[in-house]
Image (cartoon, rainbow, N blue to C red; front, side, top):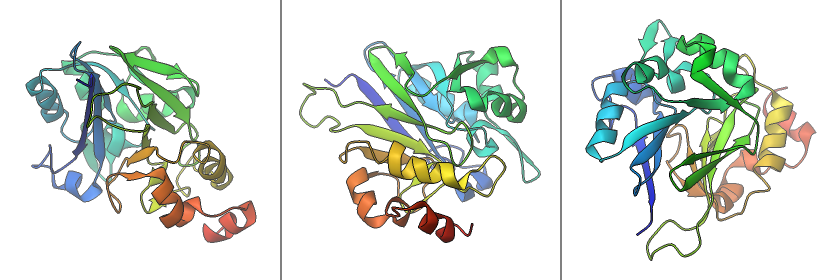
Length: 247
């Protein structure tokens, strides 16, 4: 049996149905764990954190850590558009655990989610976070924010028939199935996003399955497919990229 526990959850649909703004934002939250040890990580928990934790418990798992792609409140909680979004603070109040993000996001996560610095663990690109026997690699993919992260699960040889094949990339707001993250918000960087699309993501195996941070045009697809259909992965020179993004 494949030890990997993996769930993709859509805010406002799989949890948080009583929060209309959650459905409108179309956020995707992920659970990654080890079925044998019962430990799990949650990626970008927001909107209805109590329901998320209830879901983890119903699955017979326990939360052992949080992975954060970037500091925007629809991914970690905080004030947004005049409303208060549940997120990391509520997670810690019920299930204290380490919160992992890129070191360049530490200040933003701390401020937006209302946490203390001691709640957070800062990382560099290439670092790994283990949950039982499952290991998640952190990839620094700046552009949307300075410290944006993608999370990579490597394919495991000898997996049982029907188990996940190929690598998995949870791409946050870096890459969507039909676009990429905005670069016109504070901390956005047009040129860094180009390097992320062409170099950092372009070097991944083509059979990598991409799971984005929002359901903008779909919830998963092979990177090879996106390289054919997503225009943001098909621009080969910086000048054309800048023109496409209006810079």
